[in-house]
Amino acid sequence: MINRRSLLAGLFSAAALAPLATLATSSEAEAQGRPMAPPPPPRRERRPPPRRGYTWVPGHWNWRRGPGWVWQPGYWEPNRRGFTYVGPRWVLRRGAWVYEPGRWVRSW
Image 1 (cartoon, helix red, strand yellow):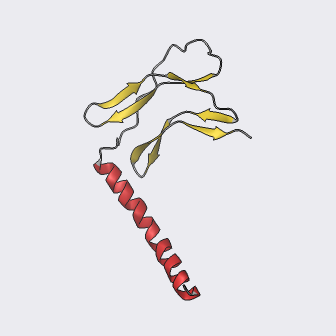
Image 2 (cartoon, one colour; image 1 turned 60 degrees about the horizontal axis):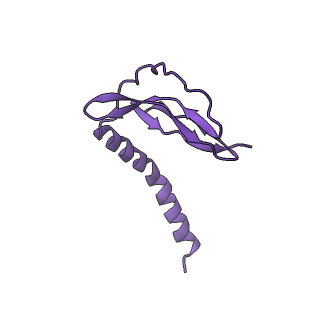
Image 3 (cartoon, rainbow, N blue to C red; image 1 turned 180 degrees about the vertical axis):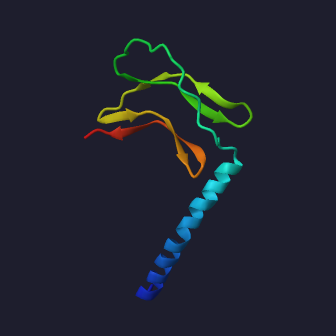
């Protein structure tokens, strides 16, 4: 049976080591060739006419090791009842640009 003291010691150890995990992740990301410069401005795309039951996801830049920034054209994503689509974006974190993919969030 786990006593209270050993449980607290484990929790404090985990809390103390948690920041190290994020540092390792950041270093690993930089080693994988994450971009240090921001993505180019979005391209102007011709948006197709509305399509019932679908959400248009605009194009965005992807980072590829080797060629660098590569344009990903827009596409139609089927709607999900009770959810709203939030498009992909690039965010600057700890000096490197990190891609946040598009996702569906619950509509309240």
